Length: 461
Ligand code: SAH
Image 1 (cartoon, rainbow, N blue to C red):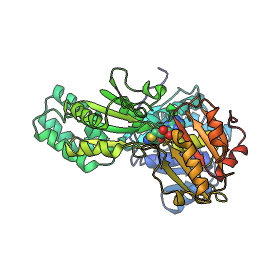
Image 2: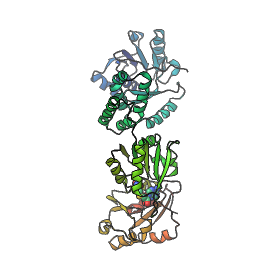
Image 3: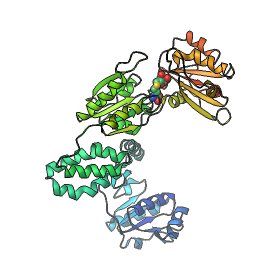
Image 4: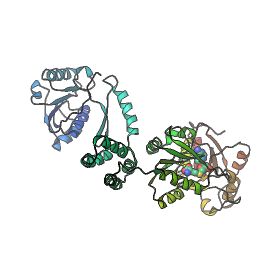
C-alpha cells in the first residue's frame, strides 16, 4: 500500500487553498462540504470563488503565497498553474508537517485525494495511488451504477436505530440483524421510497423478538426488450438477490444470465395459444413462493404494465398480503424504435403515438379503427404478426393512405434484429416472403421514413 486511506475530520478547522482558478474552486467546494473554515490565497478569484466570498463562505488573502500563510493551518491544497508557487507551498507545508496536496502532482503531495461516490453519510473513495486518476474515475462511475442512489437514506435509517438495536441484541445477533435488514425487504422499502414503511418494519422486527423480517416478497420486473444493457439498475440489483426467478419466453438469454446463479429458474412460458402455465397458475405460484419466504423475481419482457398482465399478477399478490414492488422496464416500442432508427414522435410528422395490441381473438381484431387511422400519429402494434393483413387493410379502409410507411422489427435490440420496411399496401407481401420470426413489432406512420436519414442503422433486409 503506497498510501494510508483515511477520512479526515476537518469540520471547523482552518484550511487553505492556494490559487483562485476553477481547479481551486472545485477543491474549495469539497473542503467547504466537509465543513472546513476556508481561506483562499490568490491574486484574484474566479467567478465561483467570488460568489463564495460574497456569501461569506470563504476568506480571501489577495496576493501571492507566503510561508506565513501556513501559520495555524490544518491542511493546505495548492491549485495554481505556477509550478514554482506549487513547489514552495509543498516545501513550506512539509517542513511544518501540515498535510499538503498539490493538484495533479503526486510527487509533491503528502496526501492525495480520491475519486468519491457519495450517498449521504456513506462515502466510497477510490484511488489509483496517483498512477491514473482517470482509471479511478472510471471505476468510480461503475460504483455509481452499483450503489443505489438512496443508500444514504438507508444509512440514515440504520443510524436512527443503531442504539436501539445495540441495546436489544448481543454482538453476534446484532450483526446478523443488520445483515438481514440492510439487504432485505426493509432495504428495498427504502430504495423504492417507502421510508415510513421501512421504519415501521424495522421497529416491528425489533419488537417482534425476531432477528428481522424474514417473509418473502415479489419483485415484478420489466426486463426490457432483449439487450441486457437496457435493464435498470434496480432490476439488476434485485435479480442478483433473487432466490427464485419466474420468467417469460420474451426474456432474453443474456438477461437471464444476469440473475444470481444459485437462484431457481422457473419458466412460465406463454407462447401464442399454447401457454406453458395459465395466468391463474402463475399468479398463485408467485404467492406460494413468497409464502415460503423466498425472494421472488418475476421477470417479464419489456415493461410489466404494458401488455404484460402485470396488473393481474399484483392483484393476486395484494389480495394475499404479499409485499411486492414493480420495476418499470423499457417497453418494446421504445427499444425497437430506437434500435431501428425510427423516432416515435416528430415535431413535423407525428404528434402522438398509440400502443396497440394486435392480438387476434377468434381470427379478428376488435379495435377502434377510425381513431387509429389518423394522420400525424404513430401506431405501434404489439403481438400483431398474425394480424398484419387485417390491420393494414383496416387502416387503409378507414382512411390512411395506402402508401403510409410501415416497418416490422423482428427481435428488436438483439444482435439478430431485422427491420423490414414497406407501406400499408406492401408490408403483408413483404412478410409472406420474409421468413419472419417472433417477437415482432409493427410501427406505422410517416416517422418510419425518417429511418432513411439515420443511415448509421442497419439497412432493411
Ligand atoms: N410487456 C412487453 C410486451 C408484451 S406483449 C413490453 O412492454 O414490451 C409481447 C409483444 O411485445 C410481442 O408480441 C412483440 O410484439 C413485442 N415485443 C417484445 N419484445 C420484442 C422485441 N425484442 N422485438 C420485437 N417485438 C417485441
